[in-house]
Amino acid sequence: MTNNPLHLKRIHHVEFWVGNAKQASYYYRKAFGFSLTAYSGLETGNRSAASYVLGQNKTTFVMTTPLSSDSHINDFIVQHGDGVRDIAFEVADADLAYEAAIERGAESAMEPHDLTDEHGTVRRAAIKTYGDTIHSLISKGEYDGPFLPGYEAREPAGGGAGLLRIDHIVGNVELGKMNEWAEWYSKVLGFKRYISFDDKDISTEYSALMSIVMSDDSFSIKFPINEPAEGRKKSQIEEYLDFNNGPGAQHVAFLTDDIIATVKRLVASGVDFLMVPESYYEELPSRVGEIDEAVDAIAELGVLVDRDDEGYLLQLFTKPVEDRPTLFYEIIQRKGSRGFGKGNFKALFEALELEQDRRGNL
Image (tube, rainbow, N blue to C red; front, side, top):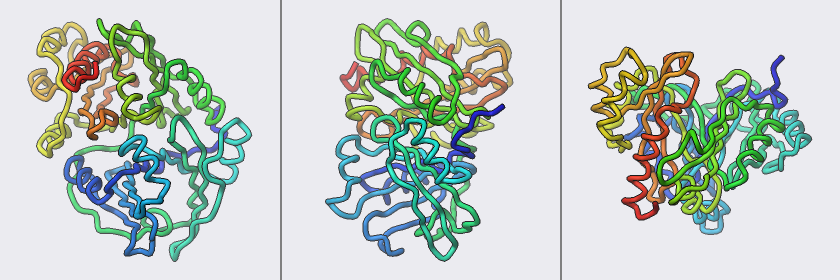
């Protein structure tokens, strides 16, 4: 029997609040291969904010910027810089989902209300999660517009980079809060603890973290939650919390079915990735066994590989895409494995620590 008390269907979109949405949308189109599919702003009658809707296969991002100095969006940007504000769900019924969430202990961010234009009506509500992040609850009914009411369609352009959909979104929370938020996702959304890692799994000589992965029953919505662990120096989670001024979404992982082709396109478009030492690839065959990809090809791009009982995965992480060392992205290809690359944690952490040291934040 499934446990889906809010009747979640999928991640509808991820909205970013940014200082300049026009420039942010240009970056994601040129660097990550997104297409502009819809727009809301002064030209559409929106006097408070400009929003650019970006699509690639089953992934939808929204870049939103305020149009006045007294907008509440500015408070978020001052505190956190550009970052994820809303991980929005499509639900069967926004009113019922909202009521169920509140009954289960969620705090309201937005009561259910109608959004209407010539394409029909959408019902929307929202609840708060860690930090200043929210989960919108959207039921679309028969709505047939390009995105949501108030948006005008734009003609998509560009060939994409092979990013199929969101695999998972990672949240960073304060020390001692990981279990609390894992319990929140269990109680409010009906998610289950899929896998967990402690500081013995994710550590180096200098720093460590702990993580719990929460997932819906279908494993299509996965939210790892990280907290820092005690270490000799500052962990990447502590660095994030310092520069983000609190909890927030640390990275979004994109699923691809050809990581070599995808990463080549992204590198050619100017995306910067973390690189691990060459010695990582010398040990790879003995650690993960036979894989379909040529080791030379993945070593050239810095792609990491890990195997579990169900198969293997390939993954690679970008450097932060903001000037603040906060938000970054992961590219992941799954060949049977439903894990998160436990065997890569040490190499990844060492690469991250090298970048932290360059920034003076280790």
